[in-house]
Amino acid sequence: MTILFPLPNNHPQRFVLHNEVHARASSVQSLPVKASHLALLLTSDEKMQERKHLSTLCQRFGVAPPEKDVDHFTATFNSFQIRWEQHGEFSTYSFYVYDSSPEPFADAALKKVPVDWMSQLTGQVIVAAHASIVSAADIDYKEAVDIAALSSYFANNPVIGSKVTGGAASIFTDFRIHVDGFSRFLIVNHDLRTEQAGRLLQRLFEIEVYRVMALLAFPIARKLYPELKKADRQLYTITNAMTQPDNNDAKLLDELTVLAAEVENHISTHHFRFAAASAYNQLVGQRVNDLREVRIQGIQTIGEFLKRRLEPAINTCESISHRFTLVSERVSNASQLLRTKVDIIIERQNQALLTSMALRAKMQLRMQQMVEGISMVAITYYAASLIGKIAEALHALGLKVNVELVEGISIPFILVIIGISTRRIHKIIANTTE
Image 1 (cartoon, rainbow, N blue to C red):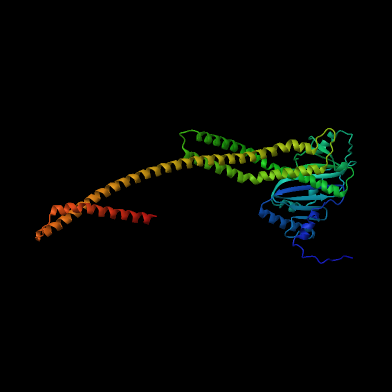
Image 2: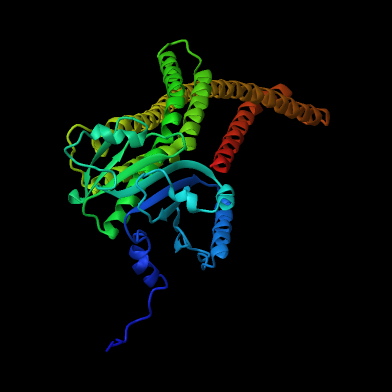
């Protein structure tokens, strides 16, 4: 009997998050099985269209379509099973058919899917792969036999493979696209359970998809390499010119600004692609580790092959991305140094200008003081003349006044009065400016 405890309210996403670990369970129901896998790059509009297109297939076979907001869906139709997953950049379709045909790749699982529906799929194919799980007896496989005999299933190309999942199966591939436009995986069943088979197929398909998605950054890295060299040379030319005494700092600063804009544009435009490449590469490594490969004498394992072929490309992408970041930092440092130099020059110019202004102000003060002295003499002269005129008027009235004596005696008093007045005016002006 279930006992319900009085707990607080559930978080709105509790059950969704709890059940997420069961959302992408294995789709394989029995063995042997053939599978076809497609990975399509989609735009936002195409993602909406593919949901409607998937619902159309479900309506044709009377199967309930996927819900509106789900990003994965599994259903069984008359003669095949489909597994659909929508990721950030791409969507995948896996088709499964259960038969025991002696030819692993003669009748692909896609042959059971309606042709008209397939022709209307949206997006661009980035990965297309066939896989077949067969028993050792079906293809007369014996470990003691030369593995090269398996190359007939891969157009006589060199075969790559290993034992996986604790020896329960052996997988083989050539990592090539064949004339039908599909790559191939051959899985020899030694002691696989259906759950193991489903996980194994999913890992192989994910390795194929993630390695190709990781390599999307490689052509960009090769294209950006000349741009990186060009930016590096420009930065060297500018920094070398900065050390010359007769350089044009304003022109160099303009060139640095343009270079910084170009470098930052490259970084911002391709940062997502390079970051995605690193993330996809990590997923490839995780999926390869999950295979638990054991070497088959005479051929490379999948892990070895991918390490030799995939890692150099990813290292190139990471190197280009890292070097662009370093160039950006160097441009920033050079710009800061040049701006500091320009600021110091401007500060020196301002200091010289202030010194010149102070000298001119000092000269103006001296001239003003000289003018004030002359003005005091002029004012004294005119004031003494006025007093002399007054004395003449008094003398004309009959008073015994010595005009020249009165005028001479008044001059010192006038000078004292003018000096005191000028000093008071200076004091008032000083108090006002403060």
